[in-house]
Image (cartoon, rainbow, N blue to C red; front, side):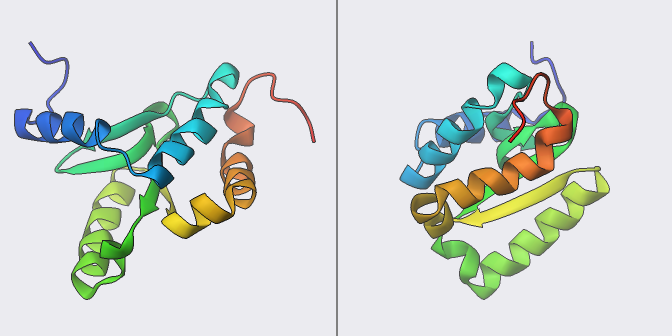
Length: 127
């Protein structure tokens, strides 16, 4: 018996997406796992309503998206706008990075994420 009200089709799709992470998504997952010892509990490909978030820290209401080329089309932008509007109404903050940022500027990406979550982390080392 499922422990939430997530539709079975969304749960199945999320499971499939978790097994097919892109290189940028794998790199992002490695970054986010570095924050786990400090209390960050990100999940990969997490269903939220009708949508699936690339990475979500549910209790912190934070979503991190790693966007590929399909997000740069008119249809992709329109879908992202609808999706972001729904998620923001649910109380989520959304951070978006494109694949290139993650693959070529991971230090900058990590610092941006760190800036948003530092106040939520426990025993996190000061810079």
